[in-house]
Length: 386
Image (cartoon, rainbow, N blue to C red; front, side, top):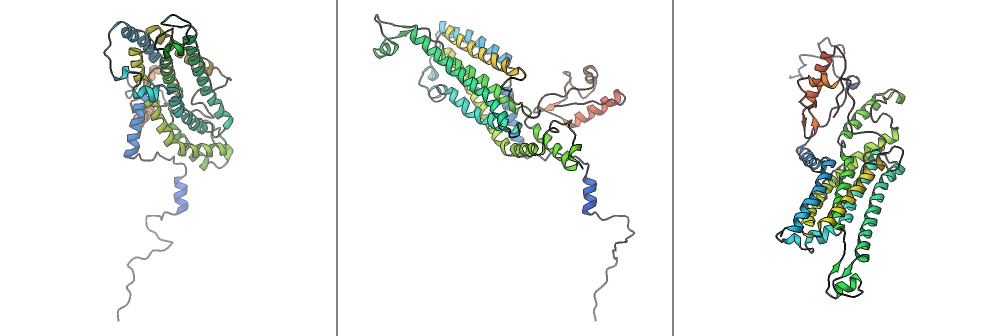
């Protein structure tokens, strides 16, 4: 009669073999202290990062150079349009679709993309503090007030200090209704709106600089807090170390929910910035004279400079600059190693910077740089940031 065969080897709890079964407690104890690594990027995410990188390259050109180009173009291109017979085109007509649908409502389109972008970014970096979010909205209130005041002033100057091409005491409406021409100094409202809208889009979009880094900060901070035996032992040296538990939870939740919309809005802001520059070229070529357009551009640049380069940079004054919240997620960390010594490292390029791909440092070379610098400085530590 056949019987069940006994296994050749039997295992017991007191086995003398050279391995130890992995238990949950052992796995947890061994995993403790190991920092989490970034998740693997998908092809879709890589393509999205490439698009965002291109948008950053387009939008974040040196603003000083952009302003200089605006002034130079408003003078030279407008002057060429006044003295030379520029060939007429579809965009020389005031009823072209871009002018009718976008430029005439330029400030509205600018606010349609800027307001939600500011709301989502400021609510995230302010960890849901509504009073701090409202301080960011003061910038758009100031910008809208400036746009309304100056455009109305331009219209008032045109109506009040002009005259009809025929003799008689006619208003502008009566003159145009009779088929006559109204002679006046008409500062270009279109040139003002296009230049000012572009500068506002650029400044408000700066909140996205370093935005992707917040994910790494949240991941590291979550690991630190989850492994801290006492909440008071959480290191405050990290950018998120000073946040309370509730603020950190709000930050983590808002960042995960809002980041896709923030990216989409930034892409739309880039498209409008390109469109405004495109239409500004045809405004310089076909509409108004050089003095009217140059003066409008100078006024727009002056308002931008007074607010974003003057008023908003003053400490303890409302409002804050774009990207300012309860923590800092952009900017460079000061290095303990002098610049001259950093330049001697092989992995650093001629400008004293680590090699980058799509604006992000190559972490492998970054680690090698730190190791080599430590060896040169006999144990001194080097901190490198992106």
